[in-house]
Length: 86
Image (cartoon, rainbow, N blue to C red; front, side, top):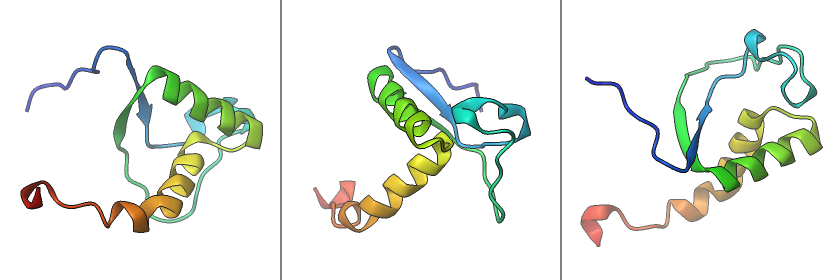
């Protein structure tokens, strides 16, 4: 597999939060117990900036904000039809 490139006008979010991330959103190496899996996600720059501001406001890591967003929206997203159903 070749390397994937970041779409223009979008910023990458690394799905891992670890000891190398000291200082982000006021945290010093914040870690969650349990299984972790690294995943790169791409968001429009303005959306990512807004999420980062909210993470800083709440003094939480961006990954926590994204996990909460998924938990709140999961049931609704599961009602969307699959591509083959369109």
